[in-house]
Image (cartoon, rainbow, N blue to C red):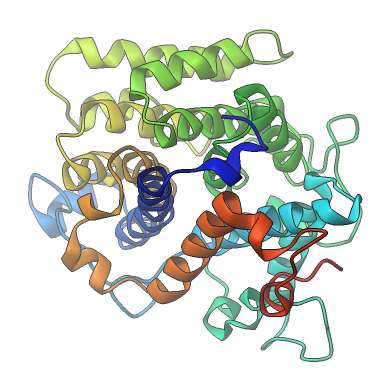
Length: 372
């Protein structure tokens, strides 16, 4: 499938793609919310409060069950930026890293302001969702990276020492560009991660995640998708921490029954992007279903919301929305917003030519996703 193939998508293909997009974005959100309930606790504290198996069902975070963190907030703005990039292709001014950067600047405004600035004509609909204006523990590098309008690049990245998972957790949507080739998906994710996280381990982890999601969204296996990601990274400077972490995740599958000790051995307790990626890949490989995978992913002393979000995104892309736990989904904060932008993304990627082209124009769509 190429970037020009959207016009020939069959109905069954469109339905499958939409289910995987919904699965990825909703799955990431429920994993984020699940992990958020224990994100500040050690494994010993988690077991003392919830039993030897650790957390098995969602508990409140930020005053309610189903509340998401900045990981989900930023992921939604990543999707918004990707849709706008596609819309802007008609103008000839097409540079997806810039469009994603502008989207993340709109997210940064939600962290400073009390509500949407109605004077801005380029807000679009997502930046008017007032529930997104709550600060939910964003990574410091994300706040400083998008604290001004200077675009970080691979040559001059923002926060060159940032190794945490703040860029990684917003990068799954790049993999949903199934009409792109894997190397382009990887490159876009890497360039956009460097806008806030300049250490190679951080931005190459984002690229690897995007390639894995890309494979899953196209119906490939987790193992095959990880192998493809490894192939994309090995020629890039500074890849060793990320490729080593992915190889360790693959190797851990052969070490016996999955348990918390194997997750911790992958570095779950340390907030480094490659560690959180390895945990998510391992849990996606061994998870019997999404519940099992998420329970494995969050029960440790590290950033549980991050590992939950990443694992949920992978398993959601693999299995589609109908595999998500209904009771967990029912309580998800912002569920209607996540569904809405999921379906908008799927429609743009499969039927964009009918919404905006030299011969077609939908004013309503262009109001939702302004070209400016």
